[in-house]
Image (cartoon, rainbow, N blue to C red; front, side):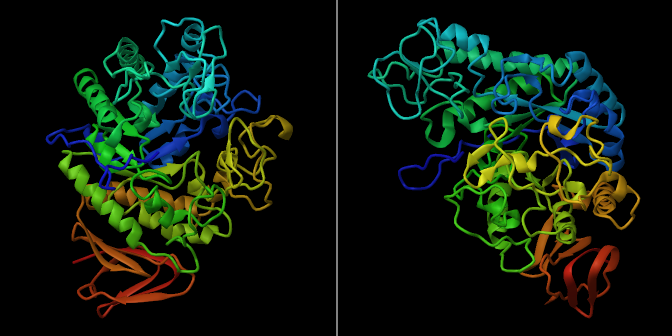
Length: 547
């Protein structure tokens, strides 16, 4: 989602609130995203569950991650893979019980891992009791209803109940938008209620009730789905930001160690709105997610038709440019400073976007990408399976709302985790036809077991990089960064202590780097530094300590 433009053509962001602080643990975290139905199946029904995640906590602890975000695990008919919720306070039976979630949180905490849940704040399922009741009651304003005979405009759907009129969905038609009001009410359109009307007030209270319920269970915070979508017709997201600052103030009082991480895609706006972090995403901000796509997107996997072709910096051809990312990152970093805190999250991929290993990109090319991800001043977010180079799987059918366009099928990024080389890849003992999604059919598909046995594997490299980041605060989000070269190779200094060089292209690359001759290798593959010059082999990277 993008921020509406102002009349001058630029985007208005909410006024920053200086002086805010957040939990210290987020500053040094490495986030790992788990798609529950695809991670591990403990009971052989073909669908991943909470007990399966618990069984593999040792993998996450061994890898070194210390915060795990679970995609929605709430009651749902799963028309949008769980983002259509029928009860925000109940675990979906396919995943287990609330007791299973409590045990997972407790066992994770004992390993130094925090668990974050997905908060679906802007809508529910059309089967939620709130909505079925609202569809019968013209006096209910929990949702946005136009009680008219004529459709009030594009984006409204006909009432499925006895109530006259139309409701407004938030994403798919099966996901009616919760009513947080309109920033610009209009008496001629009475469904445009103000943000302080009864329905919007009830929904703001329900948000706090939901968060309080799960935080009392021991979770450490939330990733907020479609965080910018709440208040409608909201230029610059000013009223939506006001709403989230209100929620953040409550959270700071009631649960000061909990975090809110936005799915906004525009850190400059989200951090000013009170979030502790926001992801750079394939959408959002003035450039519609160009910063992230300029790093990873190679035109395969999940591609919206309106995206202009763009060579990614981390492609073998070496036709990309890192400057696109740097410009947006610098602007977002300045916004974080003005907002008094907050971090920018940089993901390898997610459940809506292609994996790093997509199309022609090979496992060999991922090593430099991870070297960058884990040494750049952001909150790194590893999507499950990317640590072993799991591939985006082409040609899958639409499943639980995965298809968003002719070239945009999210199912390819949601296939079962590949734990070992057994027929079910260690994900499940169910027959292939019963699996949530098909496994990667490639005979050389990577697995955790095989890479654990190989010290030279991508998995071991990711583990070493995470350990290095943990041992060196200079490599975290608050360490200073100074760019020395922004072509091929990309070279930068962290905290005036570490030199990092990455060369994603297949051809060698070099650059003059005065003052680096005495740099000591720390974690290096295919990079040499000497006599004021750096030379990098194809797909090479290096982390060096400066004198």
